[in-house]
Length: 375
Image 1: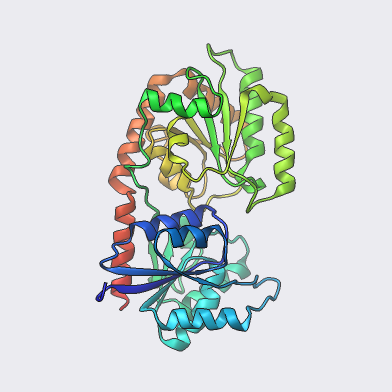
Image 2: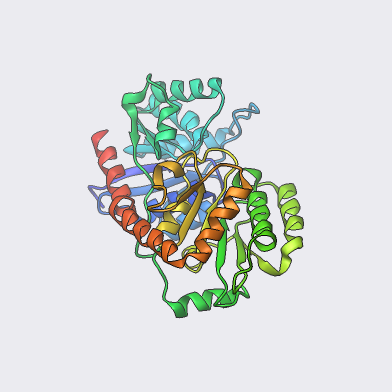
């Protein structure tokens, strides 16, 4: 550990969204003989999970920039101390690029900045470019669509490093394992399962998923076993009013819907489904669950825009459907459910691609190489 690089990760959220789950996996898989990680974030599930991995945690809250919030003197003192005792800082969220970046510049500690979100407004992208130019030695973009929003100003600093998946953990299950998972959620072993995974919020499109489910059950020829629709995720970082609305929607087809809530270990659930539907209402900046489903050999149907359109190859590793089109979505899912041979072909091809291009070890190695290049 004496020669290990000390890297401080900084994140603005207390809960566990997609970016936070990817951060925890990174912390778990970092080669500790090379990198000694620490984390600065608000108290909550992320801090607790990182602590359980043996990571030193600094409790720091980062107020919203939009609403003019200011961190407390104590928070800034803890963050400054954590940065000063680090060889490199990896700001893992947009807001922390600003808060940590200014301290890194003053303390002369290099900063890597991860941006997980797409910003539709010109002034937002200009702000991103300014922070990247002024404070970051490198920016990590997880997809080409994220990379493009930095424009041509700081483009030499922007590195395309996609997220990776642990292909040993996210892997197909045998029949007995799948049957056990289905029993947990009151689902017959012979019923096809169509799955949605994501925080309950309008952007993730649970309403589109339920409209698709209703159309499949009521308008398409009956299958020998009607599908069961699983929704995994909660509203802890989402929209509680929307969550109430979509739960009310699901009552129309209640016998065929299972609300699974937040699942810390999503791998066996994904691997127990026939089809995963990814139907975000706006362009998705990445969509880690798509890679996870591909690794589990669960066939993916996704909206044809954003990063999913970069990851999936139409008709070879998944199905791309027109965005916000419930009719097209239902048609794509129906065809997969009735054509098991084609569904299995897509699933097998998808897992092979993930194992070749998107493993977690590959992603960690690329990041480690980037860190070393900055010191």
